Image (cartoon, rainbow, N blue to C red; front, side):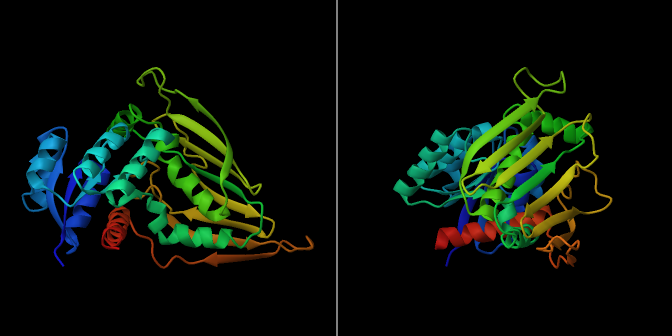
Length: 318
């Protein structure tokens, strides 16, 4: 079976990770890289074997004639690039969020179905062994569930510059929060019915209307509730910046973050050390039991990209 010819749009951290995944998977052939300037794609192109580079998506599609396209550009470009790719007959892997509105996301899904093309959204926690085990245990705790999660990043220097560029299109509560609300839905098996959210602009470096701190509360149809918080910037506190708790009538389970990892470490800020499961005594007479659940497999950034692309390949081939 011939490899799937794939074009990558966006050569930042995620685009580079996906490009490397394609280059190392015999099921794919990396045929091009697209970025706003050749400077951001040149080093990656050399690393991966002098892959052709482009600055225009239409030209890249016409020149390389790919079977699939990876959209890993800024979030406000996802809809336009994904639509171009599907209309060109390509399967699409799109980094989250798929779109900025429900209407745009629904239109893309409808287009992919009409053209019979695979449309895969990069929800990385779905391929993360720790998170899948976390969700599996959470589902044994009874209903309703209380889900408390956050990921604040005290970013500075180059990482803060990257965050500011991202926030021109989307705030951290959206950029990161889509993963966690997706996991809450998996844990409950229920639909969200109400959302409340707040945000704050904590830096004059951000344009008016942008915000670098936010939190949301989600109510699910089964009575479960979820809370998520995210903030970026040099002003952020690292006190309790990594909270991953699920509480139910039967007890609670928590992800314990890896030690000695900076909150803005691009590759390791979500790294985990262990899962802690505390089963409640139904009578309330004792504290119950505590179990440390070892993590046999804790993939890094590249490992996650590799797993996502393996699933994308399966989605294409059926």
